[in-house]
Length: 111
Image 1: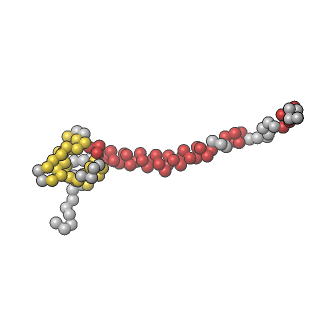
Image 2 (image 1 turned 60 degrees about the vertical axis):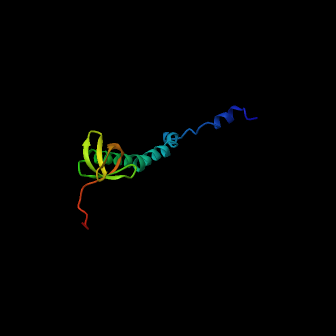
Image 3 (image 1 turned 60 degrees about the horizontal axis):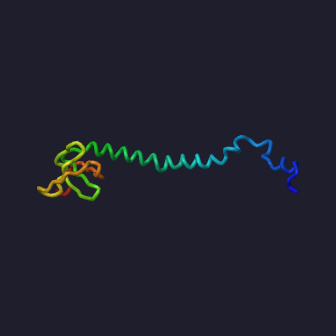
């Protein structure tokens, strides 16, 4: 019943289909990749560059916060490690990569 040659010819693609129709399924995927790049990937790369610059600029006297939340003053910078004084006469060595925040030294308003 459906095996006639006339039916097989009409079941094919339309003769006047534009080349754009063949790529119309890829357009939403390309748009999603572009949106993800500008909303997720690019801001993360920017934050990573800022964090690296902040870590590289650590110097003696800066107040730092470690990944564990410990706050202390840098007493010595040695390559990839810093020595942090967390209490009077208590100093610990910390890997620079674990620092989450660097606060430059400034006088408190109340002192």
